[in-house]
Length: 159
Image 1 (cartoon, rainbow, N blue to C red):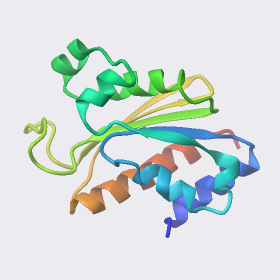
Image 2 (cartoon, helix red, strand yellow):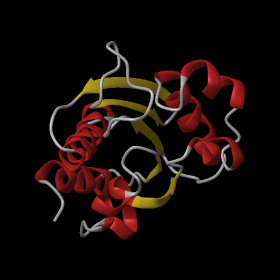
Image 3 (cartoon, rainbow, N blue to C red):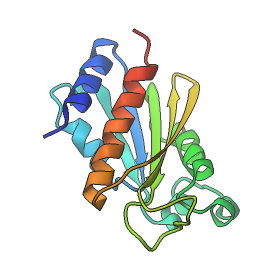
């Protein structure tokens, strides 16, 4: 069942007749799935792409390999590029990309530990970047990051 903030976000989007699309890496489709469980999902959720592996970011969304090699697949720069490119694939009012590190073995460093999540949103042309570090199990990190996406949308859509 979606969290209260996801439900509130979905209701707010429906009330404002706004639609959303996601490109997901760290959350691997869970973000879209959580929004799909809300009563207004048919009015709000346009769809999503899951590009968990870097090769899909390159092959499907055409993120330059050099950018991924330079910044890593889990970075603010690549997340921004994913959100930008998503706009060409799925028409919506809001486009959101999410990448990050939910388990060890990726591009984690002392400055970018496991639990680091990058979110980038385009909300009717406005570009917003978020970087958070969450603690907990991989599922807890994913669920916290999904709630953070909902908070970002609620904070940014006009009242």
